[in-house]
Length: 229
Image (tube, rainbow, N blue to C red; front, side, top):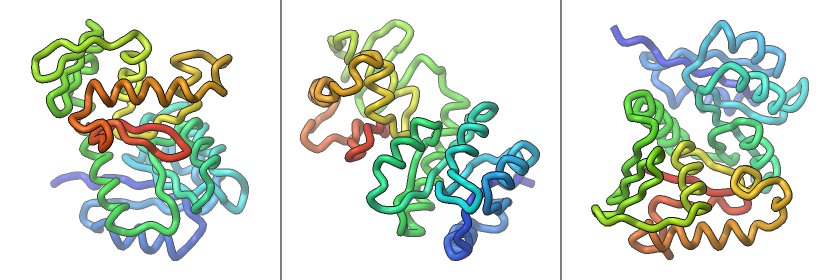
């Protein structure tokens, strides 16, 4: 008998909890519902979830407090629920360790699709060699710092390769502009985001069939970038 996957649901809105509960089959999922940061911290360690879906505005404080605590001991996927227009909150949550976000109101179909995608990536990550990636006709060897397209070696500058590496090891997750600037250029360049736009444009021209309509390197407006394998 296949074990059920476990979802830790941190949300104080009963309507949203019900909607999420109803879209996940009982025979496949065990769901622990909590409504406060304190409850989530207490339940998480013993429950050992396979996925966390959480709101940020909670009765006893900011959900990012739980997120930082949870990230100390777990790499499990965390999806954050945010209200429309809270771009800065999305950035803060992603920088604190979230993997993805859904903007309220969201559709059940989108939620289900995102959950399936994260589960597929988690399964693939446990099997694939961590230094080798393939997507489309692109082949990347992180250890050798080698990238080829259709069998032809590509020339990437050191910064372009570092950006691609950061996106690859976080495939399917949104990487914030702030994180990219700090990790690739350093904290002193935080305000120089035009560098990032230029280099991401170069990467798209080298890796995408149609750079104007990218399939792999996607922009999350006002937040950052995401690589879809």
